[in-house]
Length: 375
Length: 139
Image 1 (cartoon, rainbow over the protein chains, first blue to last red):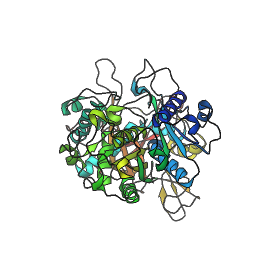
Image 2: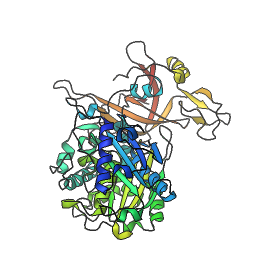
Image 3: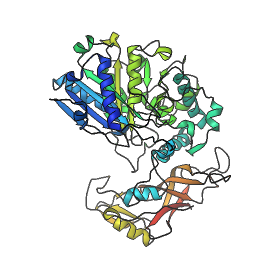
Image 4: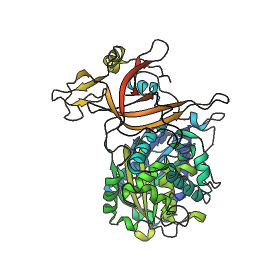
């Protein structure tokens, strides 16, 4: 990963190129070993398959740009794993980068730009629904009304993840916060306070996927890709009885765990996409860490955070660590599975569950990763 | 509370003709299924021949959120209530809930909105040469 956060003066393409170089070197490989490249970009775009040219990669056997919003990172690893399994490519670099932050401009402005006010999108904007905040707030409110979930319960997620971030040198926000801080932080869109919402970050992160045989001889402890699944419910801006209540994780989770040959009880660490505190809560329910509707009392029971029963978002996540879409949970999952988490390393880290979530709970990916011990 | 400016494009010509006449046009297939206005195929049966049919205008509250604008000086930030309404015909719609700013007090105070509350569609227009925008009001 590159330097992350308020890092200015670089284009997304430059961040992406740097991230690939860093990941390849970290693995103990050379750029000439790379024969597959999957690229992805955030809302500021600027990344395409032209990255091949920027990196000087020749004779690639796999090259594509993927876009499944927050589920893209998981989707890239899935595509890369299938490419390696099929013999299509042997070393596939998967990269995401973004640079929405500009100097002298607040983070809120990064994604708040109103689209050209015409057509259906213009109508949504004219109705006051701009960006992801209102849509996720509507989802969270529905959960609250159905199950009694409270803002304070969401706050427990923010507090726990900030406590984890204290141990992560790459995290943007590392000072501890309390539940009172969460409640006192300004409203963004009710029921979300500022501390319910993710950061905005510049930077790039890449991972390299290769065969288990080859990985065993490289510079880092291998991380096995044991299982995966995607779900795309397809109800965006349509009547959806599950809106805010159930996500694609409910069915993708069991599918990915079954493919990995493990059960939920085997999961040591969960790195869950956390664009908002609420996304963590609903994902915990959908994966089955608690019963549907019990997410509020569950997260308020002290189960999260360092020393808690369940190691969730151990690097601080997108709320306190850095916001690199699905690369945030994926990168922390790799660090934990390798046992390289330093002050924040989870004691048990053989099976790591990774979620990706895109759109407004519209696109989901699950990965089940395993430490070297699972080979 | 004001709606923002919006202009029509090719995909929204009929819809905005409807809002200009005080109608909220749904799409309806030959089977009688109603679908959201932006749909190009029936969400129930997939038919692509869809008529424009005015909604009756009644709805119930599915969910809501309160958006905060940028505060000007010492004034409290302007609040806008946003809602998902389930139209009586079935489809959902996302719009402002005009007049509910006081009903939905900050946090847990005040008379709170509730799921299932009756709503009615109305139309508002931003200043200038812009289209009429549907909003919900409390019925």
